[in-house]
Length: 178
Image 1 (cartoon, helix red, strand yellow):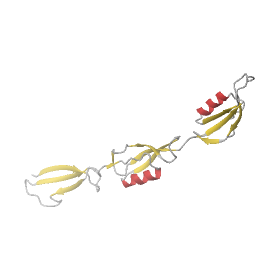
Image 2 (tube, one colour):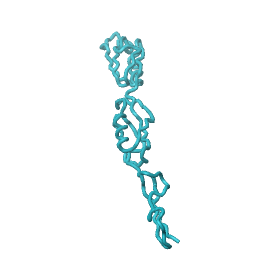
Image 3 (cartoon, helix red, strand yellow):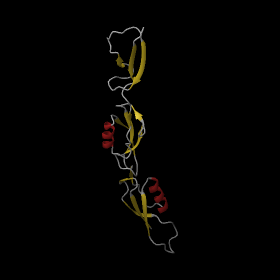
Image 4 (cartoon, helix red, strand yellow):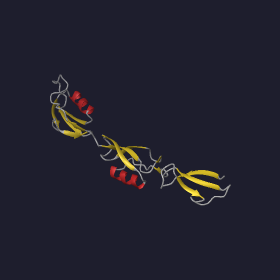
């Protein structure tokens, strides 16, 4: 009869489960009462997930590869503040442990949304401002000075850029009211 002791350790050569080492070696003759040590592989050791947020997607791929991980783009999301191609979020989080060659899912900025400037001519300036702000534009209003003869709210007489122009969210649109 032999005494068997089993332990476990990470081993890059074997996935979880197989015996990675034995002592005495396999095939060695055993005397009764000999102690046999078996070491079972738990698979490759986990790796630490790097912080990819704020990196360009190209740099994120390189940093992940250095840590024996892959990058998977889960989503592209418009963002007014963050340039296109920059990692916004990641899963798992930086510092977490992950299996080698597993994927870090990232959300990447698509940059600011593109919007079409609407036709504003003849609209009340306050309504035109509100419509532009809802689309994400900044608004610059130029109004003619108030005169005693003006009885109504100013209306848009001119706009720049012209209706139908596609702009990045956050871009300024100017309106002139009379």
